[in-house]
Amino acid sequence: MPKQVDYESRRRRIAEAVCLLADEHGLEKVSIRDVAARAQVSVGAVQRCFRSRDEMLLFAVDHVGERITERVRNRLAASPDQSAAAALEHAAAEIALLRKEHRAEARIWLAFVAQAALSESLAGPLRTSYAALQNLVVRLITEATESGSVGEGVASPSPQYEACTLLALADGLTNHVLIGHLTAEEAEAVLHAHLSGIWERLGIARPRKAV
Image 1: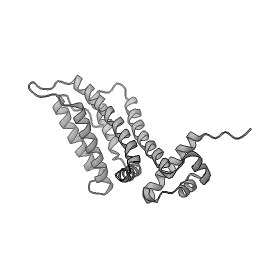
Image 2 (image 1 turned 180 degrees about the vertical axis):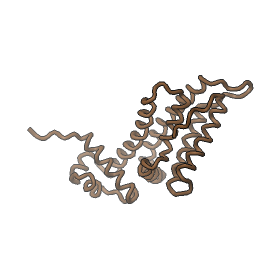
Image 3 (image 1 turned 90 degrees about the vertical axis):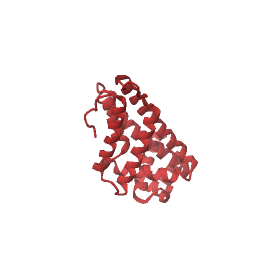
Image 4 (image 1 turned 180 degrees about the horizontal axis):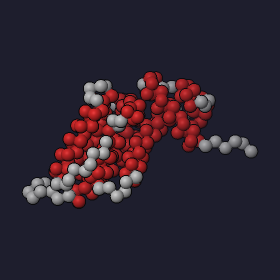
């Protein structure tokens, strides 16, 4: 019988090779030949999984986005009894990619974002990843709002607005840490100051520091 090939596993292996090369040399230097060598498969094996370099990059950017989103969900699932506010603190810490062990992932994400500014085919998957993260943050803020008590005469914060602002801040902090403008500790302080403002607007107690 012919050998059965697990193409999904091979595609993920190739995506990891794309990420490693993008981290080391930048996305523009990623070629099918180099990816095949790093993934320890033949060029033909890569071409059987992906019809073109662009299709390979599209799968890789989806892979990174799903990895970040899944890590956020796993961290939330690990503490199912925590408050929505505490859960949001955990989610924000994961999304910002400030920890040292996530520095390579942050560089890869930034490389994809830079390329997506010039490529609509890459921009689409990135928007999908951001939308998934934003929906998760909106849900957590909504749950926190329902458990809080916004002061009389104060307009209830818009979960959509708060989520959009938080994601934009997290992205900016990631970039500032990558180029050395801020240390991870300084970025964490900025993130927590912003979250404190959200809790104040929601009228709920600040949860214990999560980062």
